[in-house]
Image (tube, rainbow, N blue to C red; front, side, top):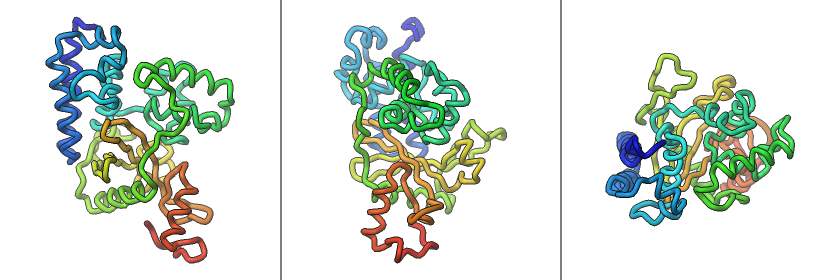
Length: 298
């Protein structure tokens, strides 16, 4: 995006639209205000944002008032691509399969498998999967192809963090994730949540997808039912829940919560990739496999 198109104004507009959507969807006023303050900062900046990023890198954005690391990453994404993953999610138009195809070496078929099997929908989440072994574990990937994709993602995203996430981002505990999952499914079943119209698998443009913004301590959450091809194929669009979490600096992670269908946790809600922790959680609740009523849902 070039400076002659008024890039600062474009970035500020996107930040304000995100704030407006967060407010309409019932998000915490803290998050709404953070986006609006960031938009005001960008609007009042005399230097072109592209020039600032070129001159000082991500540290230049972080030095601006009201711009934390998460918002700096959002601004950098807009400058680099002209789009914001967060804003598209709030609008209901995010298309992760198309997004993943912007990474050299990832075609339509692999992009769909990544989204449906790894339950990720951002480049940051894909990069983490490339480092923690999940991407390499996909059939047909292998170490050489994974290393190439990881290097490409590192180059694409390196300006945002400056370091690669070799360890998973520390996120909320299992008890918190399962608690917000309960809140979301309860409110969705009562029809009290705002809904958005996802672009994928929704030819009629129906606003059917409930969205919840909620908070537990320092963690801010956005939750939606999974709208992946796999969820539709298996009839799990009212079971699989994607929980995005953000800290006070708006750094993001995500989990997918499902009803387990096999093993000792069958019938329980589990967080994909954290099944062992879920097992310990249920044992602590006095719901060990020997004592658990399979009709119970957390």
